[in-house]
Length: 529
Image 1 (tube, helix red, strand yellow):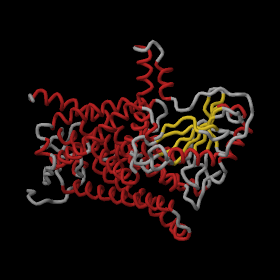
Image 2: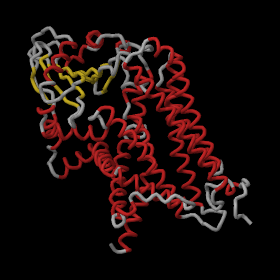
Image 3: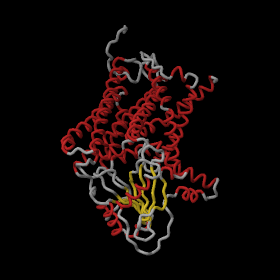
Image 4: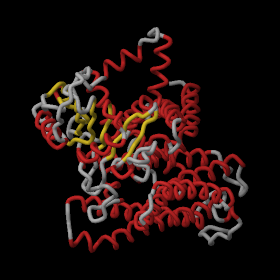
């Protein structure tokens, strides 16, 4: 490959990585945590401290919904609780607006689902940076840039791919070490990054892409065609004849029994969809999660009146459209292989965050003046932005955990406190990185993140230890797992803080990461004159 061509690819790789890197760091770090979505939900409301309405049966929830909002019977959904300590909630459309409510919220439904759920908030950070609507499209553009960075990175390193893959040249040349680590992680996890880039772009830009194709190539017919191709609920006409409805428990059991005859080994319902409820032609669609298959989410539609099966999209009975669509979700979120795949995706998520962080460090190192204490403004700006955004987002998410923990024990809704803590700490960290010397800000923000992450995990573990010992349930493993993972992450941040402080004191003085660059005396080193 010509040197000029390689330089072109290097430029593309550098600038696509820089433009997308900050958003991707947040998405990957939050995404790593989102892999354990249900475990975080259990951590917030463990079995011994149930959420409001946790004990309300689903049938009672439906009765209350139809009593307060009778027009909802034509089409409504029920999101089933992830465990016994959480509450089911209903959603429906009223005057063009989607409404959500648990049993106690029927008089004043909300326009946002699970507002106080920490797990859903962390997912929103991964999905759209926590920014409604615009954040989703922004992450779509970021995913496209991410794909360009992947392709250009592979082309750059293709000639030396085999020889340099496991070359970790540890020594005084830290730039080379960061480069080797960046290359190794990028190449070894390349298949997964391709999956994340492609599925991320599809999820985030799907609506825009569909709208564009609908106008350009399909004469305005694409939306209807797509709706029909992906429709899983049978289209029925209400008979006008009232009829009794089977209990949701019976519908779920019949759907599960039928799904298990369709080539899957598990089917755990998480969502119910009702059409024409109370009519003899009423439909109940049960969606469930199946493990060890790419078609992770499948549906079984039954008559809500007599339980007869109408349509099945599970396992071997998936349509081509259905299995393709479901596979995208399974591959992106790692929901297809149980705990083993979850831990693999968790590690890949953290490695991905490191990939973008190390890419910024490489850009900074390659542009610093090695014989001058004063560094270029662009290097200073990038260093401050990297520390403020990357370390600040980790601190902010730990702050959301802390705020949720406090809010739940004070008996208040956690939605507002967790957002105030998260966004407030993020902005404070960015401001701190701008005002403090870079080296000082790096060490101090890392120590703050380590301390907060460890404090939340250790305090929660200490408070819940007695309850876990007295009434151990399988769900207690989720609480214990989240706390132990928090302790490990806290120790990792502490290790990073120590390493950063050591480099600031004893590393190259002509660097933005040096205390001497910040006007702080450096410890004498061997060879100093």
